[in-house]
Length: 196
Image 1 (cartoon, rainbow, N blue to C red):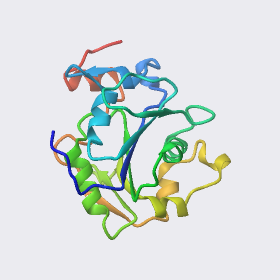
Image 2 (cartoon, helix red, strand yellow):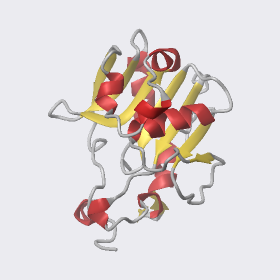
Image 3 (cartoon, one colour):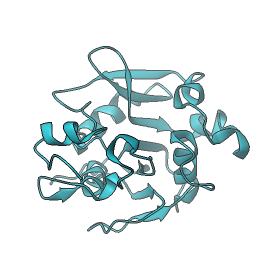
């Protein structure tokens, strides 16, 4: 895997604390696809990052050293997860990438496109063919700090509300980058096991 040596000041946050209600509450991070866990695939997308934080109530082993944290209380949603992850970073990055663990087709190339698109903006997010924002993006850390709600307001807050004041570039997905695994059928369609 090639590294982008110009990506200094970039950190990644993987959101892996969802309830997976349509999959019987299974920990999606540990689901295997193509012989690798979804968490390993998500961490791989941040190969250029100086550090990666995984926000999840339980930890799944990874080859790359990562920091595991959990929002308090757990399962507070993507805003609480993102901000908890940012708080756990050891260094203050210039750019923070965020990725849902159930988007296994997001790659380092995806994150590079998002970083490039974020230049001159407050960030950039993938959008699918219908223009819907996906939970894969890059944010300017200073801009994110400027819209940060208080701790009480983070839990249950919709991500689009947090991001509404920011100037975000929209990056069209390439191929199946927007595919996420919300059900056993989704997993089967990607070539994984069909049930829990």
